[in-house]
Image 1 (cartoon, rainbow, N blue to C red):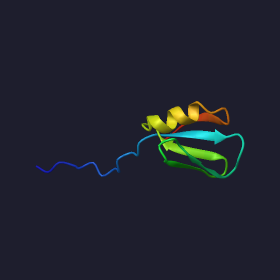
Image 2 (cartoon, rainbow, N blue to C red):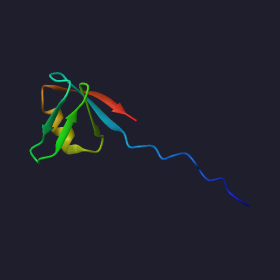
Image 3 (spheres, helix red, strand yellow):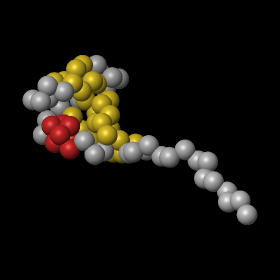
Image 4 (cartoon, rainbow, N blue to C red):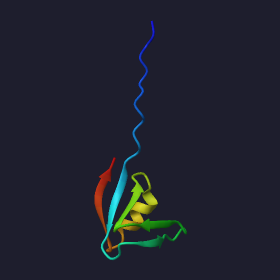
Amino acid sequence: MATKKDTAAPSAPAELIYCDKAYAQRSLFMPSGRELVVLRGRLVVPAGDEEARQYLDARSDFEALGRER
């Protein structure tokens, strides 16, 4: 007897969305040298990226808007 396989694509990990209160477009360089890119006033990082989250949460020019799925 054949079983039905789940053909749905696996869901992507959640992402965190930040609003840049100062610029619509820019590049940020974290102390580790990583680049974060702001486009249209938004910056999106993976929810599990603790380094980026801590960096952005510590800045007054960024506001966490929530999660995207």
